[in-house]
Image (cartoon, rainbow, N blue to C red; front, side, top):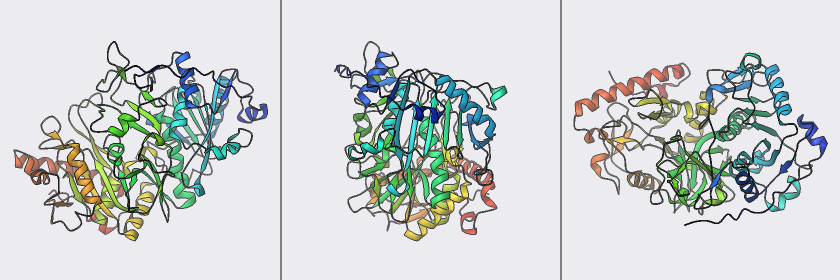
Length: 547
């Protein structure tokens, strides 16, 4: 099937008041494109040879050198707001305000007399916490990503989103073609992301990977919501059933948040970032940023069908001689992505606000094949696992990885949380106990052996386990505690072969399983040492036993 190029309208240039440009430190611009609709942005990308249309009408682009985030090049300005509040570490790296000021001026000089794209949008679906964002991009592709991913004004709000009326709370300045001088500018290398809470501005340069924009805003919300409003910000997906029973899906990239939260029987609140206040769970975004590696219509129909006009597909290739996307290709990267508005999902909730959660799922892709495919956690175990934030990388995903490698990311979000992890964990623990939320651990990884020996747990089985838990059919199940990790394993689960529920049963060599389980337990205990001094007895008692 071939889709005609319908994006032939002439892009609209808006006359931007000079005082607004001056207020940004931008004396002038060649052309200023403000609030362009998606079709005009796509048209510009095609005219500038910055992308191609797929056979379904989606825009396919490449992001150059960077096909993922560069966490070692992310900095937070150390100022009177952050000096005593941010958890300074190898992720939350401090940078002096003088460097931020110098780079801001250099970036504005770089953008002067060039085409710029400006978009006003917001984060947080709950109106009380709305964060107005003004984003300045130097290319239409990135501006399309901003349109897709952040919340868009309703038609009735159009007057408020005229540039002269809009009151930004935060700014994003994004210039992929600008590079710093590390020796003079205080950066590690030529690309960087710098967050200033005092100036309420995020600078992103040297990288066209759009995920830096998304996670920049998430990082500031992970400070603003807990610190200013006592609201738990979460790296999780969320959906809601017909009885207003909200479910949360925590997990690192590749564990299945987007896939498993999309359900034909439940409304999608969002696939990645949420806040939890006294009355509700609300989406922080207005779109989805889904992985597309090995995407197929049968297993992930919602994502597959969202790849249509207006969607932005990153770093995929076409089947030779066609404009049909090859979702199996790793030629550019394994981290192939698509962004699209939440409205592209037929079963999306609008506004994207749900009730208090009844079930929480911790997703892990255990490449060692040790953890059960489904298990129930006690409150102490839930807090232990939340602070651990475990998954595993498989061989071949990164250079030098030849066997499974454990990954521990506190709160399933350590690259994006400026405050100490214990702050988020304490808030989650209070909410879980207050509302008596069921917490389940779901292994979307391997069974019958580690990666290369065992097989990945079927998606159909994982969906059946989650649906059974959501329906309350596991609440009264007969459970048996895992001998090393302690989580409670159900003896039976409808739609799932009973023999795979206990992972030890799936290994040919049971002694080898026991040995590897103790090895993995040791990695958990070693990682948790950094939290042990602040952990309660209940949490410490939830540590795996492997002596």
